[in-house]
Length: 363
Image 1: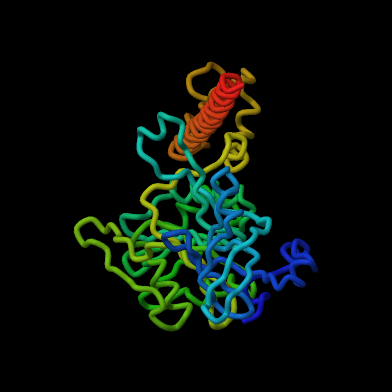
Image 2: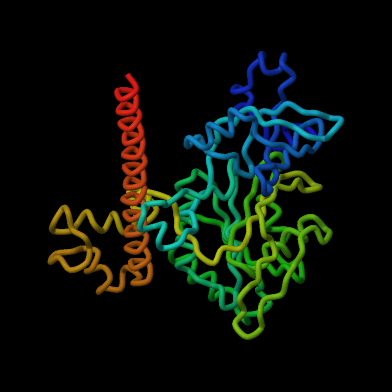
């Protein structure tokens, strides 16, 4: 195993100093996270079970952030115990994130967090199944996040054996995506896997995302040529999937290339601001330039070019509704994130004031 096989390149190499080399500190990549603050890491000396140094743990509590699968870190190894200590986190190229899953009470209190699904990704395979899971709107949501993360998307339509004419689904998708490769496959029969493999290159990282039961693990097993990932059947009565993959994991393919598998997501709320939504739906934004009012909300104002396009059949109603919903979600996240920051700041100053009063009293 060498670093280049793991995705090491000039972006990370320039961050690694001669001083770290002299101190026997090594670069490594996070392959899996475990409970209790432990991580599996891969480096040119093998695989180690690692934990963060005390300084990193303290920084993480202060908002420094935790390592994610796919991150490059610096470690010092203890070979006799096959253990390592993580001393630093290298700057990411990119990351794929969504809104952290939390209860309604937490959202009201402003505790909305960014959940990083994977880091330092080259290509994202967006897996949809041609059964009850198929949703053009969900594909739009995935694509919006992937585009704005600087990652190359590839749409994979799995389970082509379940429908008489997969081309009908291709036509639906091609109406809302522009220039994104769409590959029909059947994980059970190996159909289309060669076309999919053409997008996998040595030293490049691919992340698989999709709902539970879409067949991510089956496709990954085909790429490995062995039953690398456990597979669960979907429920027959509603075609809903059961979680096979329960944690994110980075794996090296035997023919080269790096795969990150992620657990199936029943809910995907992109972590982004309104401007990024507008960039992803640029066809709607171009229409809005012809609206009568500059601050048009595209809902009920007179002279709205977006609404006129819907009435004329030039803009799909479902795409418009998805656009408006995602903008509302982005606005909500932005407002709640700001609220959470304000609450943290108030608590900090409250503690400072309390300490000042105590000092005056003791004085």
